[in-house]
Image 1 (tube, one colour):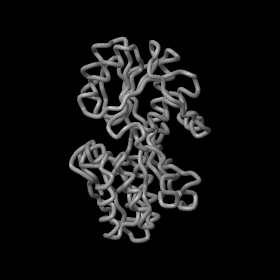
Image 2 (cartoon, rainbow, N blue to C red):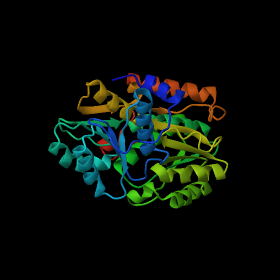
Image 3 (cartoon, rainbow, N blue to C red):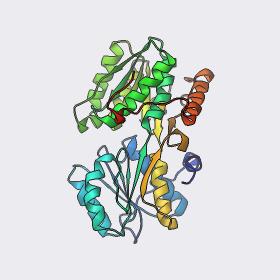
Length: 335
């Protein structure tokens, strides 16, 4: 796999944001964005950034569509395949069922699903992440930063994938402070929780009222409400998926980034270079697939001691000296 650090450096150096072409020649890539939309400031936008990196570097074009309901997943997959796009990239595990049905109908078309799902077909690449490892690091930072001894995590709803984030966060926080209290409350009972920013603000304020002073949002676009509530209260939020440190400067402690942008870029470049492969790719700390974001926006919030703790924990996780439990293996969190 091409170096993640190389691609992220190219992205950080500047990616031209240009209008997307409405049509495509044979084998142009395409993205179908999941619910929440292209500019959700999170998972979908990371995929968009990867596509823009590909476009800026190669001068190529790509197609794009945003779904507004579940029925469009299968419809748009088939539409793009019939028009000759390849690979067709789907950021979101909700595409798994539609891909399982559509991909066999187009054996010469390549598909990519990015998130907590693996589709075992000869023309599908599945990219998943060790979210628990990156969440451990931001939990470590939260535990070290908290002055009240109480922090929070706010998933969109009760879902194994989101619980993997929350459980990793709790493990990191307890490693920093064995006596820390971690509050966990959901925004909703279903997928609408990813888009309900007002409810996210309400849940965040409730945790803040209980004394939490660092809140980790695991809620896609709605999570901006969590970051906003924390900033309004003069406390700290933690972003997710994309680097959200600059959304509320001075009040976002860090972000747990998933390299959806690079997974998207790599798939597009592999197709162009003729070396695309199917199969299951799992990205954790050792592959630079997840991590805690440090930049100018949070430089004054994170001490040298905190950075050193993250570096040591990262090295220990990669070496196998720290084993971060994955909630998805047994639906259980050990802390």
